[in-house]
Image (cartoon, rainbow, N blue to C red; front, side, top):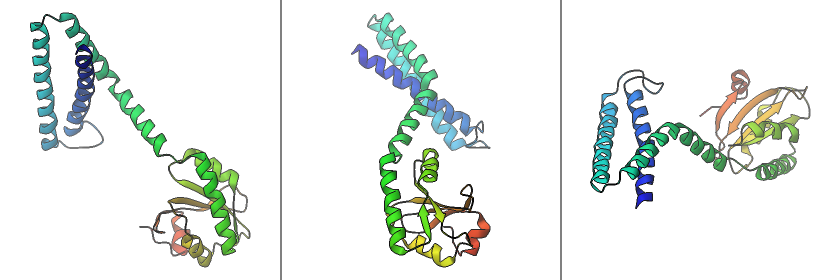
Length: 213
């Protein structure tokens, strides 16, 4: 039972931190809101008040049971977890990002798959493996493909239509290098439904008839 009380105190500390942050944002003290949102403020303030009342009853119960040491441990746990709550939130986000990231082995397989599709379509492109790997290290939530162009004339609308029509099977960020193999001539994101959700530079995307959805 003592461990349960300590765990409950830890959860209370984290919960109170989130409620305090919610109140700060609601009164316009953060980037989320720039004016006071009274409905949110009332909601968070009410929950915080209920938590405080519940904690007072909890403390009263422990005092009646003559457990001052446990009360001190629980109170200390609440304070500690209140202050480490931001770190816990960031750690949770980091774990979630890592779990949602694509593995390096799957990215390698995806590059091979795209290379095969390009060969089958007889397109004047090839996958630049090194550049693709380099960009993938920074953007692991999406498969990254960087292409070399066989001839550095302007990208044709026909080529782009064929690249868009290929069945990637998942979201892909596609870039085409310039003739120096340094900078991207075009950088776009193709969603699973083959629509384009991002494209830069805008002028080239517009010339190629790419509609961003």
